[in-house]
Image (cartoon, each protein chain N blue to C red):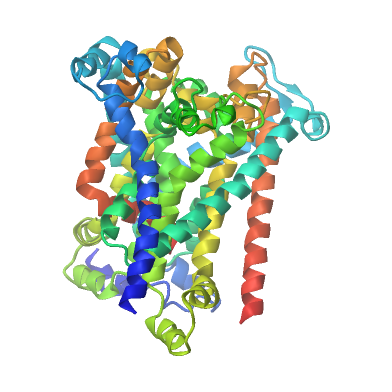
Length: 325
Length: 275
């Protein structure tokens, strides 16, 4: 051990300092100067968890997707039949994809727009901004079960807050069972996720506002930029990377949405709020179809769609950024 | 200039207050509902909690199995967070401090899971846990929870460990510390601000976790709080007052953590997005 001491010092070079572009010398990787034992010790538990509870399940899901997997019966190989059925015959799946995509586009857009306005209000110097910031963040801390139940009551036809208020101002004709009406159930749920996540986006944006370079904004003020011009031509472009990150983060989150739907509508009424996640859950565990192969195929297809969307989103935004400079 | 600022503030204030009402109002309503009994609520849904029925908390706790759900949540989340912290910090330390083949590959591998739709693993996990006798056990759920939150933990901590000056480590090694000791005596204490942020973040997200708990736990005696509430909703959903009491039982710990560690928590939850 003692003889290793002076040598191991080299191991502590930070990755940034390391010239990663140079082709690695074998001795550097496998020679005694690298405390490989220590690295293995540190990394092994995490990799073990990763292998058993992430890699193995993913591989098994892909494998399952080309079989019919029924309990207490031998699995039957069906090839790509599951995929063909999902893609070409399963209307419910496409309905769920449609709903989820609407959610994943409008949800983030509403969240971030609202968050931007609120962050601006606090940035403009509303007194007590610290308190508002803390209060607005609270919805994120709640589980979807709590949020779902609360909003089921808010949307209640007989005594919910919204219908009560509508009747109070004489718009009783607009009152309805918001989650029971196929025409408005999905927008109603999108409002819930927006309510939940706006505070989170607001805090990130506010932090970004405060880290904007002061000299650029001062220069704009010297040029007699109006508030709106300053915001539109200087702040928003500078905030673009943050906004893009938040959008993608929120987009991915909405592509997974399950809990809220399951607590409130279970995909109803008439598939109006069915998302891919709830549909997979129903096919795998809720309906008495028992076949685990088919929902596995849906999961695989869905993963490809999510990956494609995220790639497209980041490519589009990055290209536009390049063009601007 | 100052008067223009005044006007702007005067215009913004109602918007800000309205939004505050929209975010906090529902919680205030739930607190009020949790202290009222259902017949009263149906007579007037927006009445004040007078007299306050505090005994409902005891009734929910002992009569509706919430004590069991609460204890299960506490046990599962506590164990998962403890394992997560140690395993995640060690992995982050290795990825940030050592150069080895596949370092960035490991990092990318762990990081890429963040965009996985949970469906991609949950069906297979269900099969795997059944196969190894871990289905419907709290140990199984703990292990799954660790793997679920490992990516974000490693991601946050790796970013922090990376910024620590390497002189610190050199000094420790000169003093003859082994690699393991360097981690426990140098990295861990110095990174405590980041580690505590991940602890709080993981505690809250796992306390609220729903999908994996509903799939991997079947027996009522092993249900965690979110699933317990849903079961109560299914059985006695019309008992609005009692459901609200149940919601409060699951929310109070979160609000307590928030009251004491709000900045830390915000830091933890937003850490992934800011970088």
